[in-house]
Image 1: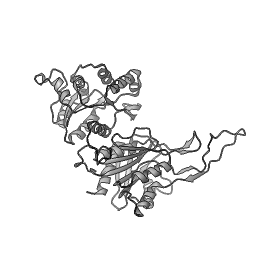
Image 2 (image 1 turned 135 degrees about the vertical axis):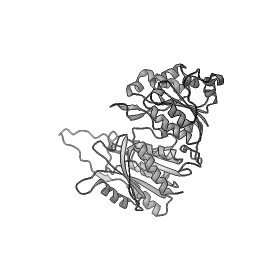
Image 3 (image 1 turned 120 degrees about the vertical axis):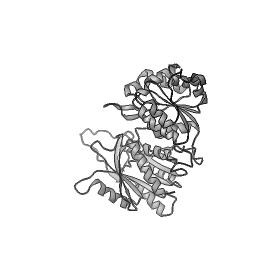
Image 4 (image 1 turned 90 degrees about the vertical axis):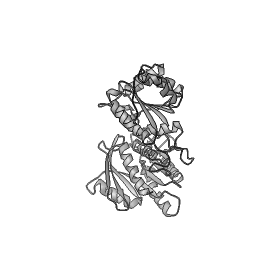
Length: 418
């Protein structure tokens, strides 16, 4: 497939190099068209080395081939990543001050735009209007992620992870529909991804246990790590069934999505969606307790100042029950991966608690991470240790949640085997 990758002048341009690798390693021909401002962040030599193609930015380069028209006409997919607020405005207005602008005016193929900018820019009424205009014209504009931005800023506007962009690009181009499931495979044809032909179920986010019609018990899970795991599995060629609870991020593009709220709903969804799958990754933060009684009306404050007593009961242990169901002969996945968000104390360390949980649950692999004190929930980075039931050495990995996800999916592939 012929792809044009447009890169505009934002700090996230360096991440577009990772996106380019996903495209070229899948066997596609990619012409990179950076704006002059983009080249101030990542130079032409980098784009040419990674794409194996000449890189041009100006309308008056290669005029003998009518390059400013040819690229758009021949493209089968155009991806602009990152797209700055300025680039969105110029595209919405139909301006073409450079080669990329001309490509966007001449392209008749699907166009995907991945914005990246500071929160105030993304939420500005002008940007909101420009995004609405582009979408009304049939251009797919991804919502940016929420997280750490340049400097100390945090909020919506973060460049989406390359795996998420690539999964959506493949969906737009009609690539990689795996075995009729409707879930897009990851980069690469169904024959070349390490998880090609596999079906992976991923749970993510927190569960909410209703106390009354307006209140619930929940946890701080953002769903970021689970979404990253689903995107990594898609990138590895798997068909992904994604079960999402309460999350602050969007579900992964290209996955077959089921949304749930309570632990009971998550339990039912897992038992249904995991049947016949090859692997299950239980990354959801499942509530261990729920209110024993549900109040049909909102619980009111008492006039005497006393507080209500809330009695809790245990929720189903979904991870352990999938293992038990498999042992009983039900078609549960052959590889089940659990997550353990742990805090150490005077009696045992985080890893000691993790090892005990692995033995107790009976799954093949447990991903242990320490939470609390600014670690774990809601953060963009993670640090985990993977423990294995077969006695192989633990594996430690630290970095962005996307990097952690790729490492976990790599170990999953090793457990699944050829």
